[in-house]
Length: 390
Image 1 (cartoon, rainbow, N blue to C red):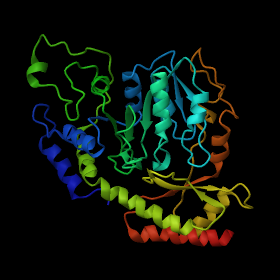
Image 2 (image 1 turned 90 degrees about the vertical axis):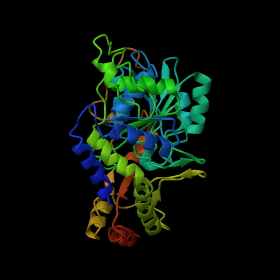
Image 3 (image 1 turned 90 degrees about the horizontal axis):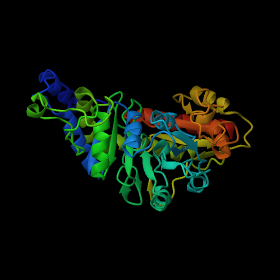
Image 4 (image 1 turned 135 degrees about the vertical axis):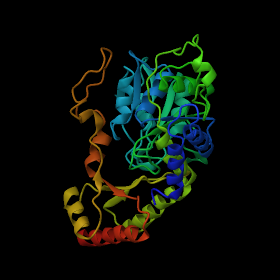
């Protein structure tokens, strides 16, 4: 179940404290401490959403106007928007044809003297190939921010996603493995970066600490008439105590919530096995997928359309599944636009041919089935649909 008595009890604890500033339930700090421990990170900073996280981490790393940040085009547009919030320009590198994650070779080809950061996205819950990117970052002095919005407890050669790159961004939007409706988290092992991120999220307050669970300013400090609050310019990106209460319950149950997705993905994988024209996302050796959804690519040479498959899948009793987001730079908000005088890419068709070829053929099947009957129903519908078109 998404919400249990555990989450409800934590919410009630917040309500009993009646939102007193000086005697709160401390849910934000408790959540951050628990999340940092779960993700093998020294620091965790909670946010109002998973786009604010990207903005804050990039800004804390010194990204701003005149800079470029390399991003994949095959993902939700928030990754690019986080770059634009800083005044920098997103530069699109192509994706790997089998994993659909950012291709390190394409990243290298898009480097310029203005490149300041790289944002690999762990698409659909599959950890990115961050090893080559971190090596490139070390060589070129770049900042690597992993967008792990869809990847909870995914592992990359034994390390949990969230502990590998300079910083990692998570989302708690309502479709994610753990959720309070909206929210986000940044993890990092860099104390100075954590401090800058915290201050950026808290209106530039100087007395906040970057450590997990250390976001509050003491009463003695804030009541002093000589207290100078703002040591830098910041935004109000903080997570509410009510949302933190729900998330604390969920991070304590995260193994269970992730396992539900894994079980659903396994059921769908068994249904797809042996079908030559429905091709799942490749999981390389040493990678543990967390399956925010189970995604397949429809082969190019089939005699029916994406829409035909979806219609039949619904007729066979399956839930509606999603197509992939449009390639970001072909969205109306991006196409043909210039976001800085130094922008060299033309945001038009042909920029990232692999992503453009994949996008219209991807099918994102749900995995958020806590009820085994619904999980089995989805797998049965998949078998029947494949049999119909085979």
